[in-house]
Length: 162
Image 1 (cartoon, helix red, strand yellow):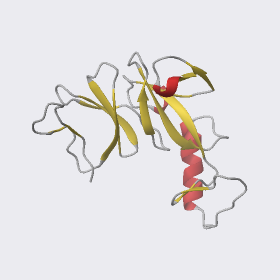
Image 2 (cartoon, one colour):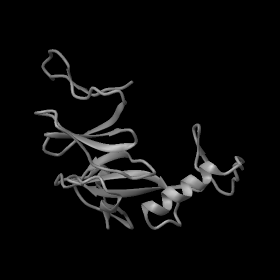
Image 3 (cartoon, rainbow, N blue to C red):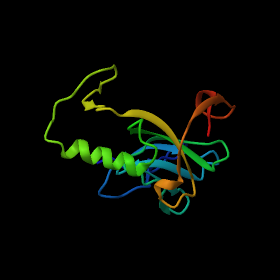
Image 4 (cartoon, rainbow, N blue to C red):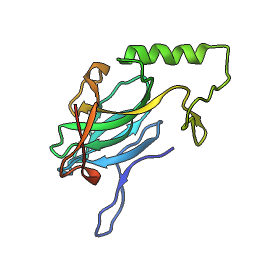
């Protein structure tokens, strides 16, 4: 079980921010330092550090990972493994259910990266999405990114155009 704590730079006692039966991981500070985005149960959550208010931001069937705030704090970019032929979350959910319920459990390898550590890709590809930091946990609020460009302020100066 992993939880998120903050520790004063000058020393002192750590303060626990998350306390749940589910692990919390991949915390990222918002630009203004008032919130943290993190992953819990394969979805993006935010917490207001001053008062502990939690908010579930994403609800995507393929799960969300590696959140990154936009410089203005209005958007959160994240990665998710999706079926590239699917145009929406309903299609991804249906495909994943078909793969899961199939009696055939063989892995067909027709390209590299077919496996990452102990996880099989099984036809999915990692795509980058953005979601409003004020989202109301609907998959329709999530947008797949189409092109990348450079913009100051993002990690490694990478920004995405929708």
